[in-house]
Image 1 (tube, rainbow, N blue to C red):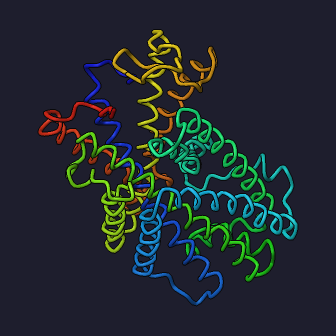
Image 2 (image 1 turned 90 degrees about the vertical axis):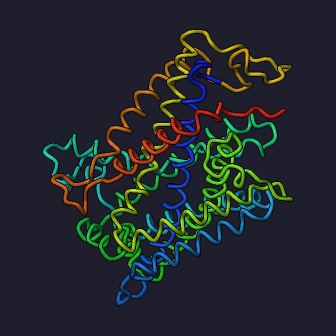
Length: 414
C-alpha cells in the first residue's frame, strides 16, 4: 500500500519475513521468561534448589502447550481471556507496588535519578547507557499486537490504532512507576545483581529484602509470574496470525498447509506450528544458553526493522502527498494509492512523529547488536546479529530462487 508498485513484492516479502520472525522469537522469549521466573521463585523459596536446563525446557513446553490450548478454542473466548488478563494486570500492579513501597526502606532521590553504574566495562558512561537501552525498550515491544488480529476485530480501522495508543500509555506509565519504585527500594545493589546468577532476576531479591519476608516476596513474584504466563497466550495468538497472513500471501514455505482454516475459523495449523517452533528451538539451550539468548533478543532488531520500513514509507507518502483523504464510503480499493483511515495524527505532528520514529528505530537497530559487556567472550557476545543476518539472507535467497515467481505482495480478499 505504501511503497511504489515495482517494489511491492520485495519489500512486503521482507517485512512479512521479519514480522513472522519477530513474533516467533517473542513467543520463545515469553515461554523462556515464564519458565525462568518460576525457577527463580523456587530458588527464592527453597535456596537448595539448583535450576537445571532440562527443567527450563520442560517448563517452556508446558507454557507453550497452555498458550496453544487457549488459542485453539474460539476467538470470543480468547477476547474474554485477554480482558481478564488486563484486569489482573492493573490489579497486580498495585498488589506488588503497595507492599513494596510501604514496607521497604527507601533510597534518596539523588541515588535514583543521578547515580549511574557502568558494570559492562565500557570506556564511558554515555556508551554504557546506549548499549543498555535496547533491552529496556524491549519491554514495550508488542504494542502492534492488535494489528495482526485486525481481521478478527470489528471496526478495526478505529479500534486497532486506539488500542495501540492505550497499550503504550498504560504499560509505559505502569512500567515507569515500577522502575522508579524498584530503584527507591533497592537496599543492596550488589546483592540484587549477584542474585541474578541464582534466581535469574534481580527484582526477586529486591522483593525479598524490601518486604523482609520470603513468603511475601514469593506472593508478589507470583503475581508477576501469573501475568507472564497469561501474556504468552496473546503472544502466540499474534505469532500464529502473522504466520498465517504470510502463508495466505503464499510467501511462507508450506503455505498450502499453514493457510488452512478449521471449522471454528481459527488458523489451527499455524497455532500448532508456532508451538512446535518453540519446542524445537528450546532444545538449543541444551547445547548453549547463549544461542537461545541470541534468538530471544532477536525480536528487538526484527521489530525495529519492520517499524523502520513502515515509518519510512509513510513519511515518504506524507512528504509527497501520496495519501488520499479519508472517505467513509470508500470500498477500500488500494490500487489508486493508500487512503487515510478514520484515525490519524494531524499535520504537522504526523510528519514530525514519523521522522522521529525513523531515526529512533534506526538507532535501536544499530545498538541492539551490541553486547552488554565490553571485551566480550564467546559466552557473552551478542549473537543476535548472526541469527538476524542468517535469517534475512536465507529469506532473500528463497525469494530470489522461488518466492519471486509466485509472491506478488499481500492478497486483497473481497
